[in-house]
Image (cartoon, rainbow, N blue to C red):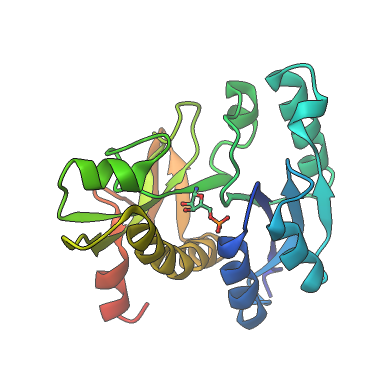
Length: 221
Ligand code: GRF
């Protein structure tokens, strides 16, 4: 029987996505294990969540390194020493060097709170509101050297209503994130996902469009 894959979850803050992954993993222990939770901030609440779940944690504070390259090298050593199959960036607020992304190409995913290619970078909810968008959402993508620009695997849309504030919109997106991220990890663990020649593949076919969370749920995947 196939061994469960080993994932590392990288965080900088609250870790609500990490929590969703922790809950999901309990039902999917035969598919993946959370081998490492790594934070670049010692006070990230996600570390408390990880400790409560008795997961191995590590803190590597970026501010203790003289530059981005050195910090990323330390991250790489920590991850490589744990034989990690998949790196899950879950609110990890650091821009990664090309050397790091190249080293883990095809083995690292990120969740971004917008319907990429719209709104790379920060303040995505506010920007969607200011633009008068009627829908907003999240994207999960393979990480490539360009920020928030790797091939998108899955998106989930949420409607924007006239009453929405930055906070309500953020909460709506978060709810969907907590459904979406575990699903993508499950797919990866099942061998359904791959990155080849800068394109995302799902079950041996190029994903010409990202998967949509709701459509997939209707088919009860
Ligand atoms: C999420 O909104 C995610 O899309 C973004 O950072 C946030 C992390 O939230 N990359 P949390 O720490 O998982 O609660």
